[in-house]
Image (cartoon, rainbow, N blue to C red):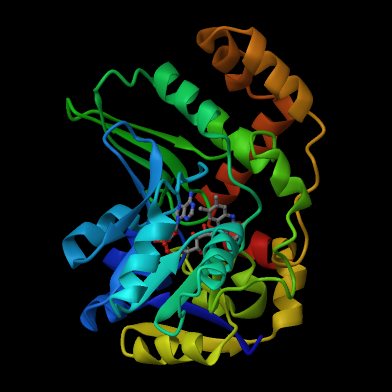
Length: 327
Ligand SMILES: Cc1cc2nc3c(=O)[nH]c(=O)nc-3n(C[C@H](O)[C@H](O)[C@H](O)COP(=O)(O)OP(=O)(O)OC[C@H]3O[C@@H](n4cnc5c(N)ncnc54)[C@H](O)[C@@H]3O)c2cc1C
């Protein structure tokens, strides 16, 4: 590990379209400008999440923003191997385990990784695609959905929404604290069983750069806490540092202290604890109808509802930032 940074994109529009501070976009643009190839997670026409290959700026927007579903790799590892054999520069972005899988395979089949740059993220787990498919069905995905965002910033970076745009022009936006799919993710109930034993933590990341959200930025750098999204990232190799240096005109950075940020964002070093209600959640999923299941998990417990209203009140009174700083 070399250095830990905070940062954000100088273009507010890119920041708005990205989950955190918009680091990934700049890294990808830098690689595309060198005629490189980008791999990352995007939706297909049915809103399933797959890894795809991108070679131009127009397609790049498909990769922006977090998709809270395990991404299907299909034959992407072989495609990366072919690109490297043909001497393309490749930027591969995925979970720490996907980066591990790719690098292990390339080593086994003797492909040079000299022109491969890998970025992963601080990952607390990936949700089951089966649960996502069921939620889409519940929302009425019979071809009516035009777009989905798990991290819509219409109410700011902290109070992000789960947002759906329909083909008839209507939209639906629900705070992540109230949406049943997001609550399943953020309470760690719908993530894969292997995520609870994730070994790719601490010193075991194989990537060149690890990206994440600087959620406690108010405590370290209050003047950067503008609620538009701030990235936390760890540069692990010279290759990673060179790529970060190449975006210094469009991405503002500030070196910070790794240990302090591990305390703020423990998922950097610890795997997620198995959620207490996971078993019941999956038993319900397997026994109830789609409508019954989501109807049950849509209900907001009273305690949660009071907490959410209290936060909204702080927001109205413009005391939210102060509350986060001293929480
Ligand atoms: C499932 C998941 C869990 C996460 N958990 C945490 C966490 O606990 N703490 C934290 O600080 N940050 C977490 N992140 C990372 C964070 O949400 C941002 O993705 C990251 O900070 C990069 O943000 P950005 O603004 O630079 O770029 P963005 O434009 O937001 O990032 C897009 C990049 O993420 C990749 N990506 C999106 N969805 C997936 C997916 N399903 N599988 C693989 N790659 C994907 C895309 O390929 C693209 O490279 C998580 C991300 C995901 C997808």
